[in-house]
Image 1 (cartoon, rainbow, N blue to C red):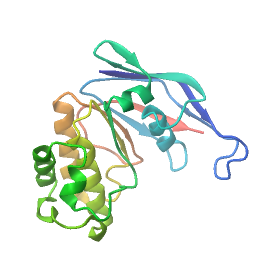
Image 2: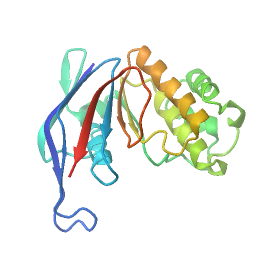
Image 3: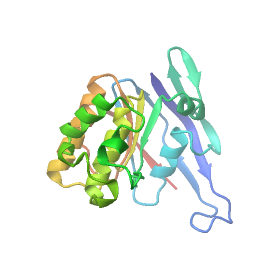
Length: 206
């Protein structure tokens, strides 16, 4: 598994009320299996936009993004449809009327979901409805849900922004285990991240 991008930009039309007329750039990078890439940048500089392009949720305006898997070169939308990519969004987007466990196991092996919930200190809340959780608890469940689907690539947008130090460490350990098992992480964050396998750092600008 390799993810690479070259010359990628996203230009928003002048009629876009929030970002009208701006162009977002991201430095070129190649990320191999077992590696993590950190996309850095101040708030509003385009980190989440770059993540959305890598995940096949937004088309690029120029340049190209390639995900190579089992010898096949795929564009991001094809990789997403093949279930190679999972996304832990900045906002958790949990289904509010489902329990913690039901959210975590939504597209996953229940045993894997249960093990991951235990690893990040959420097992005791497995039967609690998602809409009763704090912001940090919801964020941990969102990371577990993405990892539980056992993707080749995890896109994690500010996955630890709402966490205290202890819970941040628990999530970092989950991510490290995923990397040790050969997964690939693309992470957007404005915070320092303590991942030994963090091999590539790039910056998004506008």
